[in-house]
Length: 335
Image 1 (cartoon, one colour):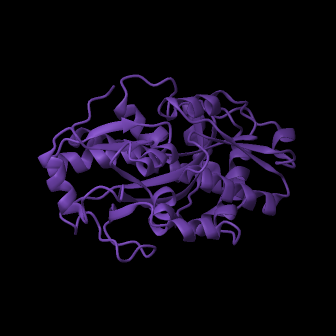
Image 2: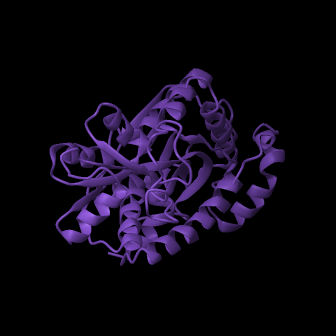
C-alpha cells in the first residue's frame, strides 16, 4: 500500500473528516479538548516498544524519536517493555493515558499476527489503539552459527532432514517465528523452535551455539554477518537486498515461493482525541522522512512506508487476514 504524501499535509480537519466519522462511529475517539490539541506537543513523549533494546523496532523508535525532537524540540523517551510474546508492551501502551504523550511503536507482531498465534490476548489489537501512521517495512535474513557444517540453504535442509528435531531455530517476534515455521512447512523439515523475549537475545544464543539458526530482521542479523560472526544463507524477500547483494533469496536458494516481510507502525491508546492523533501523524510522518532518520532506513534496508490514520487502519485489517492465512498454512496451532 502506498500512501498519498500530499494527503499528510492537508489541514487536519479537511484531511481527517472521513476518519472522524468512521472512527467516531466505533466509539474509540475521545472528546476533544482545545487545550489538549493547542500547542501539542509541549512536554516529553514516551515511545513504548514491546521488544528489547537493540531490536529493529527499538532502533527505529530511537531514530524516529530523535527526528521528532529535531522537528518539535520536544524530547522523546524510549521505554522498552519486552517479554510475554510482546504482551507486556502492548498492555502498557493500551492502558496509558490517552492524551497523545504515549505512542506505541510496534510491528505486525502485536497488531496482526498475535491474535492468530494465541487463543487469548490480554489486549485488543484494534479496539485498544488509535492508528497514527505506518513507519516502514522490510525483509529478514536467514543466519546460522558458522560452526554449523552448511554453506547454503540446500545443505541446511539436508542436514535438518538427516537430524529431525535435533536442530533448533530462535524467534523473538512473530515475524521471526512464522518465518521459521513457514520454512519448516515448505521444506518438510522438523526444526525445534526456541522462543525469546526479542530477537537480540536470540542472536546472542545463536552466536554462542545454543541454537542453530534464525530468520531475523536485517537490523539485528546483518551486522553480525558483516562482522563475520554469523553466516548468512538467504534473505526472505522476493529480491536480493542491496545491503547484502551476494546473499541469495531463500526462494532462489531452493525454497521456491518463499517470502516473509514485516512492518512497523505507530499507535496511540484508544480514546486519544482525533486532533491530537492528527498532529502525531503529521509529526511522525515528517520524522520518518527527515534526514536524521535516514541512516536507520538505509543501514537496515527498511523501506520508508508512511500513511494517514485511516489508511493504517485499513492496512492493519488486510494484514491481519494475511497473517492469519500464513500462520494457518504454516501449521501453527494457537497456544
